[in-house]
Amino acid sequence: MIIIPGWIIAIITFPGIIVHEAAHVLFCRLRKVAVLEVCYLQFKNPPGYVIHENVADFTSNFLISIGPFLVNSFLCVLICLPAFIRVRTFEMGDPLSYALLWLGVSIGMHAFPSNQDASNLLRAAGAAVKRLNPLALLAYPVVIAIYLANLLRFFWLDYIYGVALGLGLPELALKYAAG
Amino acid sequence: MRVSTCQSCGKEFPCSDMYVVYDRTLCEPCADADLEARNLPQVPPGAVRRLGDPTVCGHCRADQGRQELPSIAGVPACPACERRLRNPRLPGWVKAAGLIILVLAGVELARNWRLFQGYFEIPRAHRAAKAGNFDEAARQMTLAAGHLPEIPPLTVHRWFYQGMAQLTKNQFDRAAESFEKAGQEAGKSGGFGKDSRDALEEWLTIAKLRGLLEKDRNADALALGEEFKRKFPSNPAADAMINAAGIAVAFDSKDYVKFEKLARERLSDDPKDPFTIAQLASALSCRYVETGQESFKAEAMETLDKARKLSGGNDSFKEYEERILYRLKTREVIDKKEYDRRFRPDGKGQAK
Image (cartoon, rainbow over all chains, first blue to last red):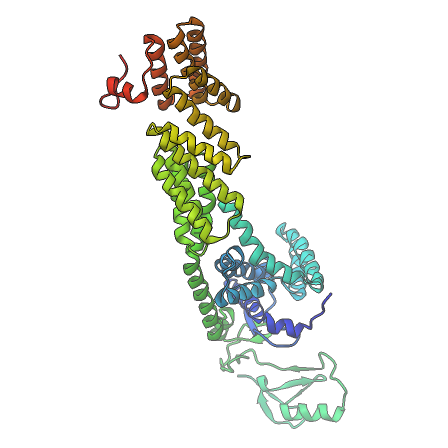
């Protein structure tokens, strides 16, 4: 198992970190949640963060926590798909295609919400369950999945996810579409 | 704005500039001095806090007079700051970078669009070919070859499918030209093995042979088939070619016994093809004409019935059947050219 320090990964995949934090900010804006401080990129732990006011509303909490997963995953596919066919299917890759694949996979790699996002969600879910919000129950498996995913980052799960999303999904989609 | 008195120096200060240090309200310099005097390795949480003034915005310092402001995360915020905080904007550099990436992805999509088109056209062409629709297969493969000029084998497939389409339409000379082009492209591209090149030669020979048969150059067709057999002795298509040409030569030379023998041989190879079955009926009808034996006629009729059931109302089959029935009815053997001359002057007429 190759262990690479977090700051090196942050340098190599910095676009994903920026998109991750931007996604938090976008969902805060969408839900009118005040953002107090944002760091889009720094080469220490955490590599980026968003500090926002405490939110009582479960839906807002859920969306702000999960936002990067949705945005990063979507952008990963959107950016990789046009480049994928040239590089993987026809093996005619050129610098632009490789650059886009790097961008897409980097963004996909940072799709997982952080443990901090998971604990925010867990807290909000606990409060929402007390208010008998049935949707909050759905948050528990999500929280478990986030913790698990972050644990498996040690085994490069984030990288595997980025590659699977950026290269695997377009391949499957194209094969399916072509029949 | 609210003011308060420092419990250390006794002076008045705006509340928003003061601190509560170990439960004493102090101005900033006195708070610093107090903490320095305590000489603590670390200030315990909650021991120091900003006093705060709910009438002064904690973000822009705007004084609201006596009006208390709502707080966000414990800090008073004026309406303008609250609006700004609740509608955070992405910095310009993030927006610009995002825009550049999306433009690049758009450019990549635009320049790779032909690759996507080609990617979908290739399986469409193969599927059409598998379904026997070689016109569509050739059309799709022509498009694919145009979209993907970097992949020479597509041009080979394109000419091959075109040849097959022409072959199914009995355009034998044009089919032969297409197969010839496919062979040339296969040689140029170098991506085809011997088996593929042999298969192309086989189809080229079939097209040529059928072209010769159509022109009644049956002996030449037989010679071509035999040459192919010498070149590819284990190729099963060679026997079929020789058989087809042999039947034509036997018919021409009125050797109906041989015609029947060859037709039976062919039928044993392809027992479910209506034309192959009808060919035996044709041979039997010739034997009937030659010998007058009713058993040949009966077997010919029975065989023709079987073929008709399998033909599914095919027009070419009807044309062939018409000629065999004429032969059985009149006991006269004439070839297609003569039959057409007599009964189909406009190419459509029926036998009388």
